[in-house]
Every structure is written in C-alpha cells, then in structure tokens.
Amino acid sequence: MFAVVGTVPVEDFPLIFGPVTLAGEKLVIENRTVDINRGTPALLATAAQVCDFFGIPQPIAYLVGDIGKGSGSRKLYAYLEKTLSGENYTSLTFHYIQPDVDWHNRVLFSVHGMDICPVLIADAGFMYAAKMSGQAHAYDLFTPDIGELAFLADAAAPHPFYTRGFIFHDETRVAEMVEQAYAHKNAARYLLVKGEKDVLASAVGIIESISEPMIPSLEAIGGTGDILTGMAAAFTGMGKNIRTACLYASKISRLAGEMTQPDPGTQVIEIIKQIPMVLERFFSAST
Amino acid sequence: MPRFFGKKKPRHPKKVRGASADRGILVFEHTGDVIRAEMILKKSGRSIRVMGPPPEILTGCDLVIEFPLIEELEILRTLQAEDILPLKAVPVNGPLLKPVDIFYTKDYGQFLMVRAANMKITVNKNTLTVVNISGGGCPDVPYLATEMVGKHLDTAPSPRSIGHTLCGYALQLAYEEIIRKCSQ
Image (tube, rainbow over all chains, first blue to last red; front, side):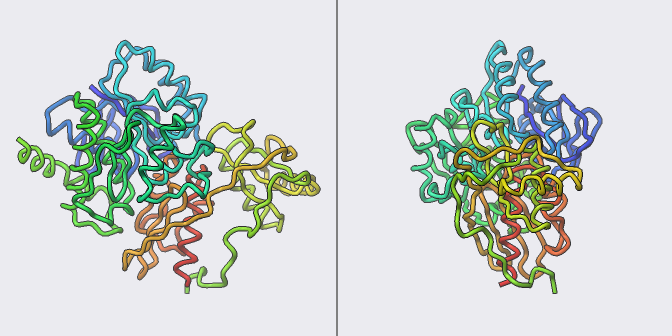
C-alpha cells in the first residue's frame, strides 16, 4: 500500500485521509469529490488508474484544501507529524504543499519513526522544503522539471524563484546541473528530470534519457509532470525498483500524451483518460 | 482593444543595487501580504522592490520589500491606511536575493508559452485566452490555474491579485511578459 500527500485548490476543503477511487472525471475520497485538473488530484488520478489496472489496493491520500495561504498545509504537516510513524507504506509521495523547512523536518522525523522506511518521493513544494532543509539525501526520488533542477543545482537559492541567472535553465545542460545538485548535496538518491527529454540520474550521472515519443506540446500542459510523478508513486508502491518505476513512468506518460494528440491548449484530464488504454498496450507489448 | 496593447513599461530596474545603508526591508507574515503591500506602495509612487529575504530571516516561501529608509514612516502610514502592517521594518545589512529576471519563450505557432523560474503560462495567440498554466510547487498554482485558464488575458485575474506565494509571484512575471509579447 502506498500513500500520497498533497493539497487541493479549495480553501475550505477539510483534512482528509483515506483511499481514493475514481468516478468518471472526479476523485472520490471519504464521500467527497475532487476535480481532476492538475496538481495532487491529477497525480492521484493517475496512480489510481495504475492500481485499477493491476488490481491492487487504491492509493491512500492525505489531502487538505490550500489556495496558497498555507494554513491548510500547516494542518496537514501537523497531522503527518502525529500519525506517520504508526503507518506502513511501500512508497510515500509528497507533493503540492506550502514549503516550510521546520514543518518538513518534523514530518521527516516522523517518517524515520516508521517500522520500515518507505520509498520516499518528493515533488513540488515539498521537494523545495526538502532541498532547503539540507536533507535531500533522505529521499529516494525527486521529480524536478528543468527550472526546478536549476534550483537544486544552485546552492544558494531557497526557492526556484531565486535561482541565479548564471545557472541556465537549459535542457542541453542537464548533466552539468545534475552534477551540481549532487555536489551540493541537494539531490535525492535518484532524480527524474521531466522535460522534452526525461532524464533519470543519480550521483554517478545520467543513467537514462527517454525522448520518445517526443510531444513538444506536453511542456505547456499543466499537470503532465503530475502524471509522471503519479506513475512513479504507483510503480514504486507496487514494489518496482526506482529505476524500473521511473522508466515505466516516463514511457507510459509519453505514450498517453501521444495518444491524446495534444496541442498546448489541451487539458491534462484528456491525457489522464488515455492511461488505461496505454497501460493495456504497454504491458501486453512487453509480456 | 485589450488594455495591454499600450505603451511598454520597463520590466525591471536597469541597475541592481547591492546592500546600501539607506535601504531597509519590510518583513510580513505571509507572502500574500507582500504582494498586496507591493501593489499599494507602487500605486502610491514609492520606490520599492520585492526581493528575497536575508538568510537570518529566511523561512521558506519568502519575499520582502526593500524600501528607502528615509521614507519609513510614510510607507508605514500608507500601509496602515490599507490595514496591512509588516511584522518589522529593519535596515538592510547585506545583499538580498534577487528574483529571477530571465524569461524563456516558446512559440508553438498558434500558442505562445512563457516561463519565469519554475512557472509557465501559455496563451492562444489568436484569441488571447490563457489555455494552460504549468510548473510550480506551491499550493496556489492549481488555484491560479483554475481561476485563469479559459479566460481572456484582459479579464483573467492577475496572479498578483489572487496569488499568495513565490510561485504565484513568478507566474505574475511570466504573465506580464506574455502580455508584453502579445502586445508587440
């Protein structure tokens, strides 16, 4: 069983913990429905479809409403600090949440109290907090895009907004930025860099690049990175090793993108709808 | 004609100042307060800049307002009138972090995408409708997308008016840049 932590963009959405299911174009959790636009709901919708396909238990979600004011995130941090050490997950993915170093450290301390440490994945705001805390090495996987990789490579930046100009957000310099991120101890055990080419890297450098199918429009579509992270969460949650999980995640996400025939105005829900068919094709072709 | 087909404004100050004895910073509890205070002070003609905080007060998703120390009283009075007060106003002792000022643009033909830091905004060039917002990691990003996508650039709420975090602020810069590009 694996879990995902994040927020929904509805201010009065209460803190909810439980398995999520899909009902049409909505997520259902504890009798509440959530729109799947982008962000954590898109990640969860993806992971839930992988679970459906393999007939495994649905992901456990820790969700709260937050529109950027941070109060929902703080409630969630406090709940995690209190409860995580008593839980047992194969993978645990942290996603959209207000970055806060102090709260991050308290939650990580609680994770370290779990009987068996899950595969730890951080993306979005929680990845920013993990980097700032100086404890990036405690994580198994970060899933930055190119702008976020530049932030990890910049020892001084506390947020991607302050990444210094000499660290170019340039896809041709991924190897250099990966090296810098590891040199400054700002990277997890693995990095899956989302971009025109997805790049899987570790402290030894680039392990693999996945560039096919190449769909340039995907970069503009909000939520495509959440699909990739959702796949990685689900596959590591099923017990796949991180390398295999990331390769599956990248290839399947790209195929779903291709099948949608998107333009930069396509909404991510259209890609998410293709996932069951792509899983069918991908796994029947590889068996 | 949309309001932004007007005169061009310089995007950023040409010269970046380092630490200076005549400058101070206003520290607020929330990034959303900084964004509001910036709007109020710029409207009242103050020479201020939004910057990153010095390391000793850095907590996470932070911004501060740099201001001329000599104007402290008047600035505080202006903010008080709008019911928004900083936690503290202190002199600048060292260099401040400078927000990103490099933009990346991708032209897809019918669509145009602009990225600032970790935030991307895409518009349909023919209709000037915001069609996608992507990137970012703070929780107001999905909220901003919900509020802005599908709306004309002229009627969509600006990230500055409804955003609360650094990601929201980065999106504001991308939004201003895409308006500038669309007006060329």
